[in-house]
Image (cartoon, rainbow, N blue to C red):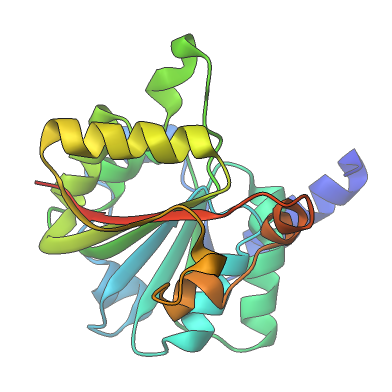
Length: 224
């Protein structure tokens, strides 16, 4: 994407009512004003809140918002020029139950209060295969503890990935730490029990992975 195009998207994001772009200082210096008040002040309803971490173009967040109007969805990514597409689609389609935050995922516990979130989706994250990158892996122990803090007691996490490495690493960690695995699937399109929100929504990149013959894996779990 050219820098002109990126700048245009950044400018548009600033005008979108469904996009929030706090500075790191705003989030870390004091209590972030929306923390604990996302329902009250952003969505203006009491519906369950579902996050998509590393939301990319925002396709999953938008598709989930269309499928579940009784829930609120928030896509989080540091790359605003990417999720511009999802934010724009949501405005064009008058979807009031989806928003986007441009920030680092490691700040998630500063953005949401304890037990404020009902469910988390992690869709096609960078597996961060090199050992020195493990601290950025979105299902490492540190991230899981942050998720546990903001999730309700029975809150669930969904991991959908084309990376066999990420799937295996996460399963091993969940078993090792004693978390509750609700379902684990090595190829969602060959399993008749795959949930409709797993097989019914395909992102741009997922379609590419499928064309390359890569199996798409899925894990749903609760953090103990």
